[in-house]
Image 1 (tube, rainbow, N blue to C red):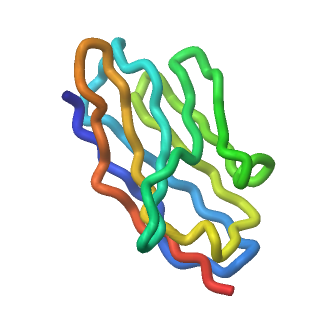
Image 2 (image 1 turned 90 degrees about the vertical axis):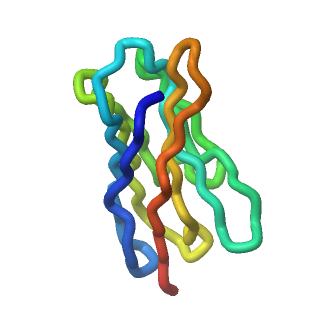
Length: 116
């Protein structure tokens, strides 16, 4: 199972932007979907966006038009560009990777805090 390391979280004012990155520990040609979940305090972890190896994307309605997911297959890295951030986006963001014949790998999470 690959190890995932997230970076790019932090504190930002409402309306600002942040870019999250998630890099896999090794190159794997069998990683299919990669993506991001988030978990706010006292709430369950929910999908934010995901992207397949061929670039098909999916977003939760609340972030459409504000967040963009992308990936670099050569580096097995997935990115989440977040713009027009709102206090409701405050959460711990976790990346994941689905690799063939292996259980889902998760990162440890990165905190995103949006102040009003």
